[in-house]
Each structure stands twice: as structure tokens, then as C-alpha cells.
Image 1 (cartoon, helix red, strand yellow):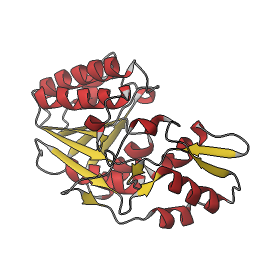
Image 2: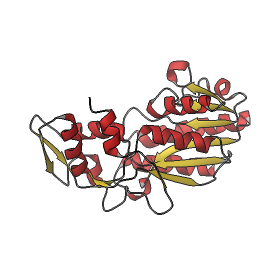
Image 3: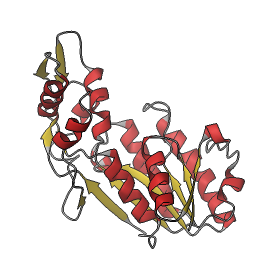
Length: 247
């Protein structure tokens, strides 16, 4: 199969391309650096020419009020070009529980992206993932100083980017789901607990202070960001991943 991976040079996209090509498919990475711009539509016809599948892994530069307009424009451009090119399957990566955290504009924007795909002319699949292990350090940096890291006790079920990419790759070469697949890591953590585990593995002696108003994830309540029944559970645990990335 020929698969166009838009956002194919990023954290997940580069992994998806590698997995697909190793499996004997022709996966081609596209991004602004290769001349494909979803916001303007520049380069899309050429990128999608002859493609059986398009995987859209693009995201805005910021997660603020500009997010809804970004996803509306990029999805409109992508679906119009995919329909014109006769692409038979469009795949996007979204977020587990996005519809349960309406106070976060970026999560509302991801739900909008899903809705546009569902209403569009191209058979589709939506993969909803929990948060990535690779972003935990970034999350900690949002509310930290030299002595403390403030984190809410929000429940998360994070997973490794390699496992996310494998799921996206598997879905992309299958029959369009015309629905949603939820994927998640094997363990549920409170974010403050996850912070303590991470700092200990890094040899960082700062204290984690539980603060249920700190950071973006304070907007999520209960088990909103935890996968529900029917989700595919990945095998890599956080401590296994940390052991390989502790340096």
C-alpha cells in the first residue's frame, strides 16, 4: 500500500513511517519541510497522488484559542484533496477523553477535528491515545521551579510513543474503522505520583507538591483521561520506558 503520512517527520509520524516501510508498504513522510502545508493546501495534490491511505498527524504550534481554526482549515483542505485524489482511507490521531474535558480549548479542537472527519467524504479511522511517556518531562516543566514541581492528582494512563505509532500503523493498513479505536498504557497513575517516579529516576531531588489547580491537566476531573472498557492496552510500562530513557 502507498500511505501518505502528513506530519511524518515528528515524534509519532517518523515512527509510523518506519514501521510501515519495514512492513513492506510505501510510506512517504510529508511536512512543511518537504513542501506540504495543510493550512494552505500547498503540496497536497502531489502528496496524495496515488496514495491508498492518508494519515494526518499534524498539530498546531500552540494549544491555545487558535487550535479550532487550525483543525477546521487543515481538515477541510485534507479531505477535499483526499477525495479528489481517490484516497480510500483517512486516519487521524486524537486523545482519549477529549470530549470529557471541555474546559481545554485544545481538547475541544481535537473533538472538532474528529467531527469534521466523520462528516467528510473519505472512509476514516480515528485512533484516540492517552498521553505519551515522552511528554512527561514537559508537563513537569510547566509548573516547576528550582525547588518544587506542582502537579495535580489527575489520573492518567500514559503510553510509549513506539506503542502509539504501532497502533496507528496497524489501523492505517486495515479496513477503515468508520469509528474510533482507543489505546492506552498498562498502568493508571495520579499525575503527582507520576512526577515523583520521574524525578526519582532522573536523580532530581525537587519535591512534588500536590496542587489540583496546577497546569493544563488540572482541567480534567475523575477518570476522564483514563481509557474505558474496550481500549487496546499497550505492553510497555512507564518504569520499563524510564529505565531505557533515564539518562
